[in-house]
Amino acid sequence: MIYVTGDTHIPHDIHKLDINNFPQQKAMNKDDYVIICGDFGGIWNESKEELYWRKWLKSRNFTTLFVDGNHENFDLLNSFPVEKWNGGKIHKINASIYHLMRGQVYTINGLKLFTIGGASSVDKENRIRSISWWEEELPDYAQCEEGLNNLEKNNWQVDYIMTHTCPTTILNKITEIFGFQPKPEDAVNKYLEVIEEKCKYNHWYFGHFHEDIEVDDKHTLVYEKIIRIDNI
Ligand SMILES: [Fe+2]
Image (cartoon, rainbow, N blue to C red; front, side, top):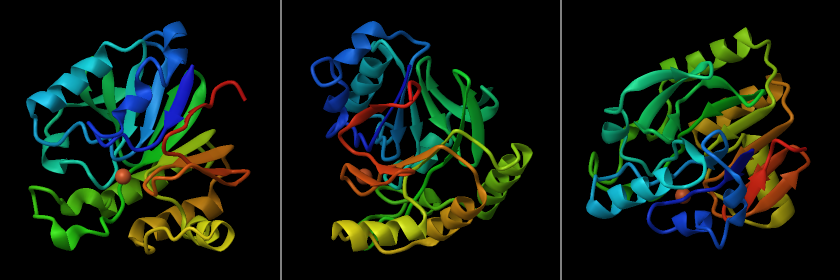
């Protein structure tokens, strides 16, 4: 089984994965996955509380996968070992928490998944560099290039795309159709628009905007919902 959900901002929004809110985990095991679409928040300052939540996730009946958002400590995240896993590169946080790195294609339980995290923090003026804000929140040129190359190798065809933010046209749609003001367009939206135009895929899941909205039949903004993606 593979489920996808939105930002967990450990410790604030991790409770959506507890047994009451996500009882499906009773029938799951470590070969089943929950994918978090960025702002995992569990790689921040190595506090006791943070380590508790990582251990808690390890004790769940699933393996946790996360795309990075804009609220992650990138110095710390990049200090974890890089390993090859299911066709793409991961940071292995512990035995059952893996960071799905930028520009990667994985094959998970037979499904092809493209991931690229990152987005701009709208409140970065109020944050402190390398303490609560990292310029690595935006993918760099090499990561973007790696993404395009990996999609090319897969003939621009995957089953799912998982990101933190979304393509520009989807950002505009959210405003126009749902009257919901998301964050201003950033460089990642523009890059994702290139992928939107060129890549064939079944569905795109993203987080960042802290709402649950079916934007159209191909794009879902996810936050509190936990959506199964391998049975449709
Ligand atoms: Fe967030």
